[in-house]
Amino acid sequence: MSKSAPSFTCTACAASFRKWAGRCENCGAWNSIIEEAPLSSGPKAIGPRGRQIPLSDLATEEAPPPRAKSGMSELDLVLGGGLVPASAILVGGDPGIGKSTLLLQAAASFARQGVKCLYISGEEASAQVRMRAQRLGLADAPVQLGTETSLRDILTTLDAERPGLAIIDSIQTMWLDTVEAAPGSVSQVRAAAHELVNFAKRRGVAIIIVGHVTKEGQIAGPRVVEHMVDTVLYFEGERGHQFRILRAVKNRFGASDEIGVFEMTGQGLAEVTNPSALFLANRDAPAPGSAVFAGIEGTRPVLTEIQALVAPSPLGTPRRTVVGLDSGRLSTILAVLEARVGIPFTGLDVFLNVAGGMRVTEPAADLAVAAALLSAREDVAIPRDMVLFGEISLSGALRPVSQTENRLKEAAKLGFTQAALPKGSKPGAAIGLNLRGMADLAAFTGEMFGAG
Image 1 (cartoon, rainbow, N blue to C red):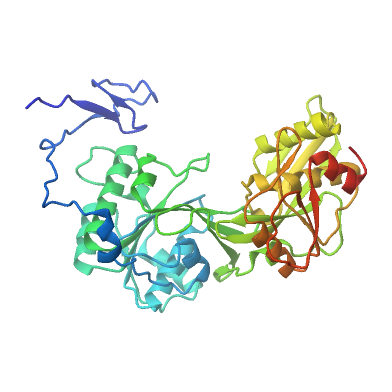
Image 2: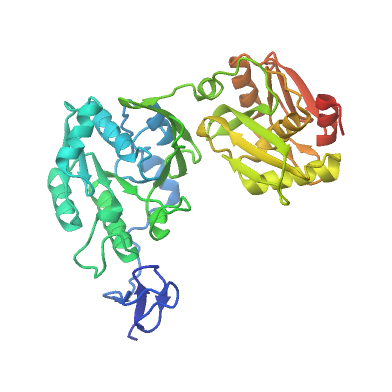
């Protein structure tokens, strides 16, 4: 049998090399390259009596996984209907956004529903966690608390206690004595995540892992951690807003891009069961630069307000400031407005914002963004009872988007009476809205603002 070639990995950036060096060529770190141990034995074939299972037998032999409800409807919605046993969940978010608060409340809710919960903190002392629990009114919750960073001791405790749910806060503080690297390094995070996920699958324990994020908003450490786990959740929000959004970007047991909306209060996080009404609050009088977008987040329709401000620029290069939307998409829409409709924004500063701290990634928001920009530029308010959605192509045409009927039903439920949408959309059943179908952006601009 041929001997495996040695492999060396940088503990700081996870770059791989065929030979050892004192300094990593990729990130420049010194003394960070270690040798990766090869497999202890060669590969083995899976025999006919091994782990092979005919795909046709799965429907009859295995029932859908049972789910434990937390009693927090927004959390259960993001998880796909509840907590699945033996699942591994990774939760990331900015520092101070409320990850520990959310998970402590979740642990208390699951515990009160009969799930044995163990909350392990590697960042705080037990007294600090108890103080937070008292402030949140959770001091009497039947949650077991542990403070430890040694993963060997944590897994030994989990094996003995066998809880239904274990929360690890956070993966960057965990360390394995078999890995020669500092806690939080790429090697430690990867090894710790591997051990936790394997334990969850072998022992049937659901594990929630907290992960720090980088300045770019990605979960720190190797991306392989996100591939290992079953579900990846991001806890988002703007510091200046009280709203927090729990977003599923990966979920093997439910819909991805599902969101749960919470409001940060003095007593912790409160659920927002109707986010559309909350995001559209205080819209009493129509104002130029405001447009309501009927969007879809996961499986639920959510209406949000898109705000724009256009002003003469004293600078040689006008500013383009965007909050809650992709700046590249804004540049594309501005280019289409100038090239296809003949409305330039040269010499004008453009500021765009999604109200309430929401982040919109749908191309369906193009029409609402264009409407807000034109409304601000022409100083003409869009009717207060109108919602807009539709994708803008580079030719200026408006393209229909999915789930038109759900978007319109949500708008009608909140009192809107008219909608601007691409011509050819399928609204489904009659929903009592005055639908204004537009073939292209020029037709929309001419009808709404008398230009184009």
